[in-house]
Amino acid sequence: MTASIAKFMRDLEQTWEEHQQALIRRRDLRATLAQLAAEPVITHIPAMTGAIGRAAVERFYAGQVLPHLPGDLEQRRISRTVDRWRLVDETMVSFTHDRELPWLLPGVEPTFRRAEVLAIAVVGFDRTRIRSQRVLWDHATLAAQLNLTAPAATGPAR
Image (cartoon, rainbow, N blue to C red; front, side, top):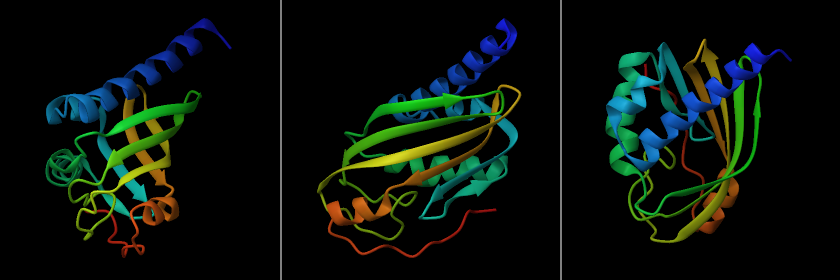
């Protein structure tokens, strides 16, 4: 691997880190959107929530994600793989289900139970901007920890 490719891969990691910090830690919509490509796609699997296109992604973050992030949401990265086109993070996510989570559990009222589940994010890039995110949640474990049955899928917004 050349030094320029290694630097490019570090730049991809930095873009993803900045996006995550803006979204989860600072909960700053403008900063969250700053790392995205012109026509991003976000899909949370298996809930099949998300959005396609810049305006829909902005609405998704502003309406379904940011106001509904659990107060004690924490992430602990297990592994990360990066190449010139994508980044894959394997992360343990923990939180108290203290509010509705339309982006993760559409239509499910808060249970006030604690959950810790595996999430895998597959992030595609257009140069150094985030083009796509597929976030796969261990939904069976989440449902069991929250004492739920699986909610119906709704599909990404357009």
